Structures are given as C-alpha cells and as structure tokens.
Image 1: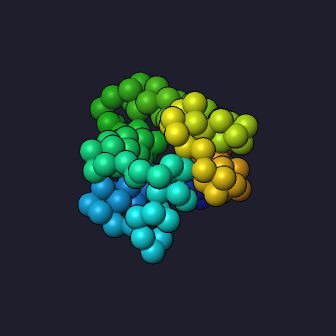
Image 2: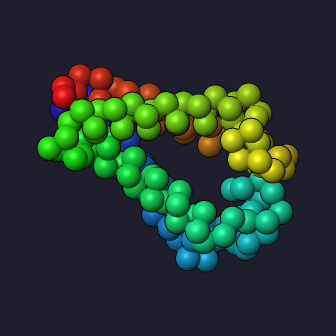
Length: 143
C-alpha cells in the first residue's frame, strides 16, 4: 500500500467517524461525555450547546469532506481534487486557530478554559494531522 493510499484511508475514516459523532450529538447524545453541561464545556467551550441543526450541518460537511478526500465524485475528478484541497485548507485553518488559542474567531464563544486546553492538546493537532493526511492522499491525484 502506498503512503498516499494509507493517508487517504486514515483521512476518510476519521472524517466519517467525526461525521457520525456530530450526527449523534445532533440527535441528543452526549457520548462520550456524561451530560449536556460537560459536553458543552468540553466540546463547544461555552455554556449552551449547539442545536441539532448546527450539529447536522457539521456532520454533513464532514461527510462531504470524506467523500471528496475519497475521490468522489469519480466522474468529476477536478471537483474532488479542488474539494479535497478545500478540506485540507479548512482543517489547517481550524488547527492553526486552535493552537494559537483563537478558536473563538471561528466559533464565537468557544472560550472555556477546559475547552481551550483540550483544543490545544487534542482537537487542533487532530485537525492539522487530518489536513496533512488529506494533502498527502490527494497530492498526486490527477484531474
């Protein structure tokens, strides 16, 4: 297996899992956290959690990102290539903002100390890793 193919599988799998998690949150789950208050503090960084529509929108965006990174639509390779580049760009921006402690510029109100700590420790590095694996997966794609 090539590095490009492995990176693609990692990216597509992670984006799909994250899409499913946001879908579950939109349906009212707080998994893997015990309650809405903890979920809101840890995942969102503010007292009020997002509503179902916001969670479903993010789930849809992540699902679409997974499809683009997977090379879909196959009949429109230029679209999937440009879309995957956009996915990598958005993930890199999100990761950089989080590492700089400024996720609140992208998601206003995301300022709780617990969220900011987890953002720098896990969320932002994950975004940067996914951006990198997406670039690797799609760098040689023709279209």
